[in-house]
Length: 321
Image 1 (spheres, rainbow, N blue to C red):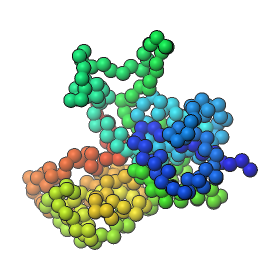
Image 2: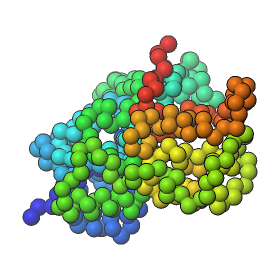
Image 3: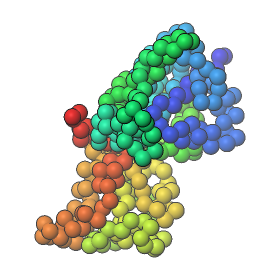
Image 4: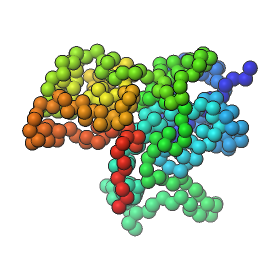
């Protein structure tokens, strides 16, 4: 029998999801034995035309990582959707927009101005030279992707069958998902989260939580936290109460707070709002001035509460001005 076909693609992301696949270590050989890898540009020499020439739905599984930041990301997302039987949003960026989604706090024009005109590292004699989507040269016309005004998650552009959370997903979970898919067992309901739990990160964290009232927040470098006590109880902002379990609470085991990369728990629409709700019950203040004083100690609230989920949250991007 012919091997099932596997595709992997890297859109707007850091590349950590591809590294996580390589972190399967010797099991990467099993992946190669089980699947016919028909597309993995970061690791092998494939061209977009190779995929365009394939029949629709001829790819059995596609692991698509990265958010949709530009026209090329969108075009390949649509192409791989057409060619794949099962399209998986692989990792935080594909799932919810990830850290690239924080660009929605500003506008495309402001980002371009900073990158090509206003930043200290930009040296220009003519007010800034900006990239153009089409440029004529002696050798012909160069075409580059167009940056979008708004960063989007994968399912905001194409239909997605399943989701694997994490920044990046843990290799053990990646292998578990592959094993399950290849077991022949009935696949879960479309739209299911694979390789994760159904509770919160706090439920798998081994630290003792006493639900203390907080009168001050600390950044992790400001104190040496007790390795056995809940970080939130110690005044270190930990996203565990608003984050799905399944990672093994790896960050808190390393004495650093959860950052929220596994996305919101089940039945939570907005991860940031969930975290704000959790904090409202532990802040040791009743007067507005005291509440504001304590909250002002949180550095970059949006970037903290929505580090991975802004593009997929109930918040809307800043209007162009």
